[in-house]
Length: 211
Image 1 (tube, rainbow, N blue to C red):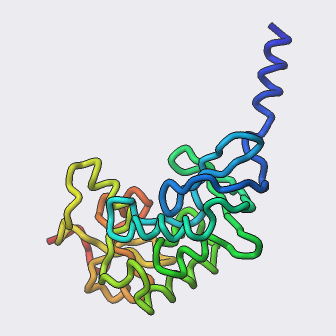
Image 2: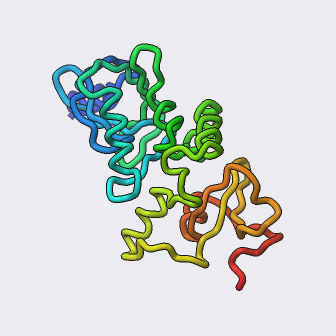
Image 3: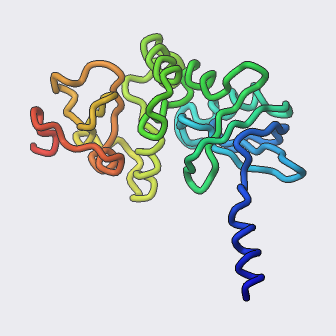
């Protein structure tokens, strides 16, 4: 029994993923999910700090095609982060000196996931520039974020809920009506349910939950 306990302790102490490794990208599942070879096996990885449109969404296929054009069949450096999403390790990907996560945001094919990666100022700046220059998915006034789309898909309501939309702003833990004085730059449209799941509370000025 003691030997079994020691073996289990040793196994649990071995990290599943090194903090950094290099491997060949053998598949691109979605714009922000890739398969990379490591020691003879395929590792499924979520790109850190970004969220691409789902394949069924507008620009979802374009995001996948863009990531594919950058890294498929090439050796990338994977720098894993101390967070997981959808039971996947999150990582920064580099092709030589090119930061792949950042390139995807630059062309407007991903949202910056700032509540999961709040200190990635390069991703923040790249998203703002993509919004201002209406690149990629920012060509539409209020593209539906993939987290809202997933919530809608689970509930069977993937159409625009109209009056149910609220808006969140960077560095502000509240959600607002679009007419609120606090809604200015770097706004993201979401549902009340989505905002609450991310830890946002209603603005006390515009009172978005009241008719």
